[in-house]
Length: 258
Image 1 (tube, rainbow, N blue to C red):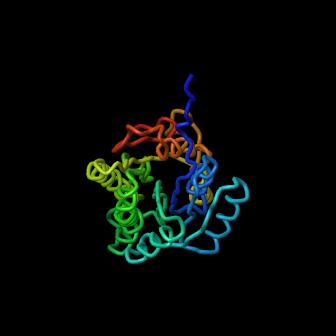
Image 2 (cartoon, rainbow, N blue to C red):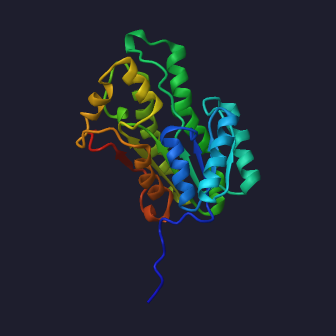
Image 3 (cartoon, rainbow, N blue to C red):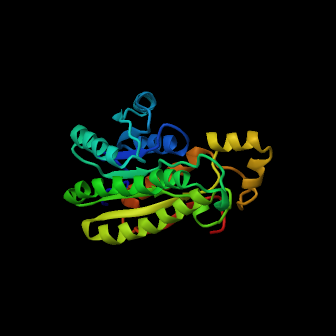
């Protein structure tokens, strides 16, 4: 009988997770390390990157390094990618998790600076990192890119119009990249989280008591998810278990309607 291969095993692979010092990004970088990958922890603050990388390494035994990068700054991303290449010589998995929704602003209130700030991080950042990582993945014969959108991409909301519009743009961009990169063996997919426990969620609850119950009510399961519940989907898309999946959108939302 032939030996059964663990399709979810990421041993020998290198994974970058942007925005991975807190929230679902933190959970994803931990989960990828537990699946065997060497991981790159990244956010804007080097001290936090180093701290989380040390925590991940100690708890999993995996190689974990922290490299700060503000993905909303187009010219800062190349140096970040070069540092990863110099350290590991390869990139097999890229998770674009960094994102912002800094304030509630309706279309009539929108300023150009605010709009551009949100799109710089939520759309320009994933585009730039994918542009720079794709040639390395192509040389390796393939890889997996995972863009973290949001269920807000599918449901309009006046106070979060910039955030929702940016995530909708990211979904569309992902499909375009999947089409272009498929001949190179690179798969590009979207995870669209629904309501998860986070600093942002807790802040909204403090400002608007009952907020968490309200967003939980929009799911079939009537609850807000724990960050650990994003791990299974991201490991699936990062691994050979999803070898025939590209250009797809997977919602992790407890049944929220698109």
